Image 1 (cartoon, helix red, strand yellow):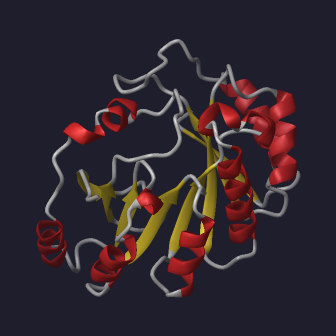
Image 2 (cartoon, rainbow, N blue to C red):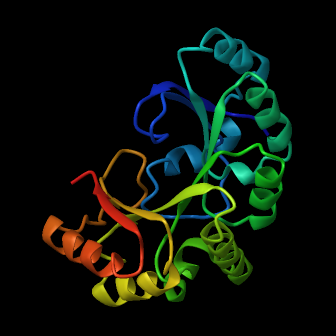
Image 3 (cartoon, helix red, strand yellow):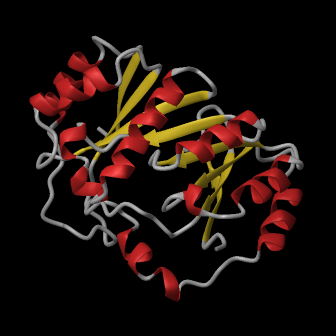
Length: 229
């Protein structure tokens, strides 16, 4: 299992840093609003990037780039993830991990070894609706564990949630407020239809309601902001 994509320059994906993004196209969730869906379901047809080529690129960008984002799909599915992150870390880069939280043991291990500097974890909905994304109750319990792990402050982090009219009501948001109570950051992202989205009949939530969500969530979360509105 190797990386299948690279964004060589991003000013947005790693807060406060100029970063490259590495993508793995395997995922254990099936979110019908994922903009990488076409890539995920065709994963076996994708050509792997040679990791030594990635390292060569990153060596040339030392002093230009500050960090590397490991994203997906779901990066914690990669068996040799630690080895790859360690090699990148040795070049002096700060590492951000994007995750759905389904493997808290991997998160805990990487953080304890000083290999992760920042984590962005996706929150799908209230736990009552998580089965729509996982089809696996065990993964839901893992997500709960990862949330509590990040809330404990073991590493700098953010939670993020894509707002979709068909999924997110005031009732759901109030439940999410309780789930994330005491969290440091939550970013609410506007849903946008793209070629890679499997269900193009989904709809974004209008800005007025999104701002109402911010008001509710801010009652229990330190920082709540909208992105993409």
